[in-house]
Length: 111
Length: 115
Image (cartoon, rainbow over all chains, first blue to last red; front, side):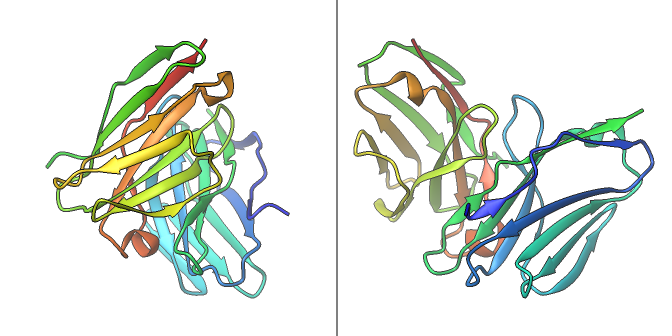
């Protein structure tokens, strides 16, 4: 089992709809969780971090964390073509403070 | 306020050669982490430097080594290059102990191609 798993996609979502990106992790001791956006040929850019169960909202983005289910998600409301990118889920697994990344989900917003 | 800067941007090397990549962290940051990102994959942790010492290491062979200088800048060295070392090498900076909670700031990366 991989430490951080994401569906590689592509996930196609119509413009204006809600995009839902999911991530599971294997280490129950994981403490902090991150979503990065990476445009093709560019470096990752931090969108949000979350470390408490529940929802955290920032503009059009909402991160959701469920530690019991070892699941973290990112919702993007009112999706725009500029949201088309690869979204990387990353986890601080706690026991050694390493940040481990998933493979990423490619998101395509359809105009 | 300068972000994380990496050099060079692109590099082409021949198998068996050695390469050095450089990174200057964001102003105020003291910790540098290096990641390797192969095409279509997520970033893989190589190692982390703080106070001029390697603090953490991922599953990479000894051919990968690094250094951190008193001004917090860092180098990544790769010896005996293999074709499989072709990747985007990312430098991430943070404040020690905070990066694990608040995330890293990444540089623009160095694209290494081994031929």
